[in-house]
Image 1 (cartoon, rainbow, N blue to C red):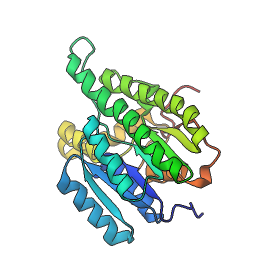
Image 2: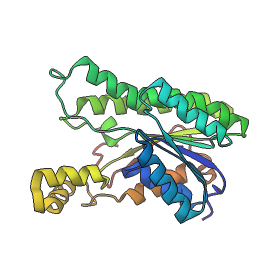
Image 3: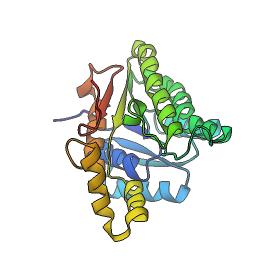
Image 4: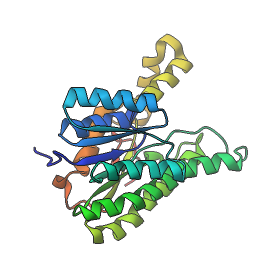
Length: 259
């Protein structure tokens, strides 16, 4: 299937490792140019060069902290200088570990800025570029925890739930400008963070630990690969998913226990 992405510019935040890296690689594989974002200039440049070498597309590295207004503006400006965004994926984020009673205000605000305000600022700034090019697509990478929370990360659960609601609100506004907005809620995705956590907890038996987690939580009894999730997200952002507007898709191997 031709996803009709050749020559488009896909902006993906937090895209030098894990899910974000999988996404920029998947977009590039389809012929799209990509904007690679990370806080580290070295990481962004390294990934951008590797993508250009492998896929022969243009990859623009942008080192910025998108939890800040200045960092978001750097991404918006770089996209404009590269011809304007066609696709935006709000992906930058990280898990948390706290209790509501023990977490300070600053931690709540840090996660709010990273998971929610980054999406607000970037979608607002990139929408004009998309509209000028005839339209586009935006995707919020939330989490299954937005609807089925895990007990040990209330800040992550809350901010990801807010991101999902933001995507729904944004979709009604943006479709009038021919910009489609959707949300994806991943379940267990085998990222470097999951592997590192498993090593810390179980040492040489880390893979056994991951299997135990999958056995408990996912009906499919395994983690998804980053590539499986990335392929789904790239399709949602492509013209081949043109009637998908304002939806939240759970890519979770049966982890969600409600309808």
